[in-house]
Image: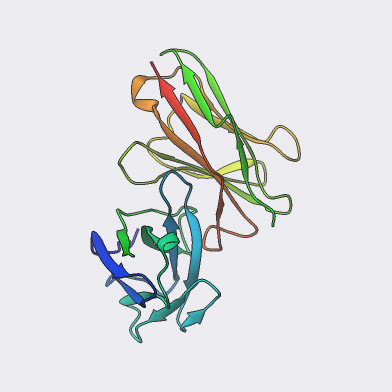
Length: 111
Length: 114
């Protein structure tokens, strides 16, 4: 599986934008970039995913570098409810039928 | 909004006993998964299931584990002879398409093996 690298932790002030980076320098052409988050004591929750183009949904935006070797999850206005561990995951559409979670970035939102 | 449900929410068992963890995936989903998360550690893939058969499994998913879709709604994970190290949160997930599409996770079953 292609691996991802994320900072262990980040802080953000409430109501400010948050940019969560992810490096995936060994990404292949068939890898989709997914972001999930896990709130305390809950199961992972889908946030957003993309292949090549930037993506927006009601939760967040995903900015994908032109060479696809990195991506950034953007939360436009952090709320206390956004405090969670954020996972950047590569899902290979051409290979193994599994998704591998890393250690993620623990986001702390400061009131 | 449809969601994945799991029962029980908590299970305590004695080492060596069999446990069955149950999941009801979202009704029109075709792909099903089990993951586990040992306390304080990362989420680990166990198995994926499609068309009534295992499509992928990890090295964790050894002979003591099995999965089944006994009817049109339930998806179960059986651990035949539990070990202390099986204590973890077990998450079920489902997706309408293959694994590179969105997976919807259940709230988990916390298993404690004594």
